[in-house]
Image (cartoon, rainbow, N blue to C red; front, side, top):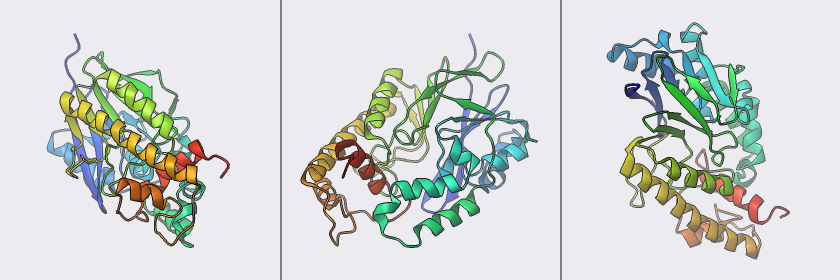
Length: 312
């Protein structure tokens, strides 16, 4: 029987959010998610030295999805490994690794149309230039269903869990049910207080799928919130994992109901900062600032609009 592989969270502070990566201490070490451009040198390398490990020895860079705070440090980390690490991402999110412009395009196609910020595109472009360490071609494209060997009998299985993004994946340490989900389990959201996903139907299906996996350890991309606003943290035991998954499903149901009612009446442009989804925000009692990036309120509402009112 393969011995249990240690997992070490690696924290890099950034703005209102902590950026979390995870070091899998296998014979061929892996890091799940990479923060932003400075994270590998400023956060990961010293954290690994503190536990007697070297960033140069990392052989796998496993990306859960393509958002800027998860792939921003990928090129820098790859360079620190002497370009020897395998860089893995789902094919649907690979454009976000290959091109900074893809992040601008995602903004304009989704949440950007509701924010009313004439400088929005320029701001996203500037952020992409600043915090993405380099455009690069992934070493390995996955779709879900693959098994990656980290040496010594240690394997990681890849599970497609779209919803947060089209190419979100979970990496599962086989035999110990340690599951790395990035931002695919949102609960009540992070600092913005609202869950963010581009495809509500896929998000719900994948939460139900993760429940069936029954993680012994669930590793989240950010400290998502409970109903009272307290964070779950990023390393959850089996009980907390099931609680977070159940709560995420319950929240999605409430958001879906509010969005459906709002869209059935027809989205109305108003002076509300939540326009054209002010009725949904009111029904949910949401009073957060919807303009703060990554603007999960408008990201999710746009997903429901495509679901319930695709021609509006």
